[in-house]
Image (cartoon, rainbow, N blue to C red):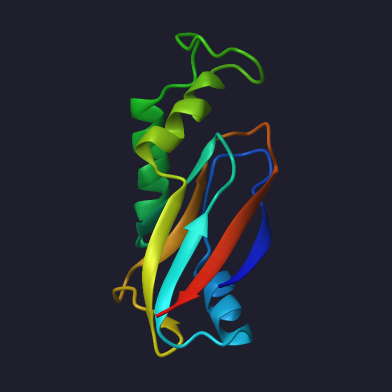
Length: 136
């Protein structure tokens, strides 16, 4: 298995960050042909989504998450910025992992699909994302 960690700077704002370029670079740099790519976020307050980006879906996702998980004082988990407890619930809705088939060294994503880091935690400006390729 080939594996690497990519650091992503999200800053002090909610973010949906397209990882597809990092994934393509990782697969090109290795010996990836056919197999599975596993993407993992080792954080308790971030997740991964396969969505379309650039056409409004990324801000729509953040808006929907704000509706589902408001940043207010309802959360029992209270350290960090106000409403930070919602960030700890996020991975139950937006999983911290995704697995994508790789065919001919390329992720077998649909035309408009991208693998994205979803981060609502404004207290943690840098995220690690582990990319692992398992040959088939």
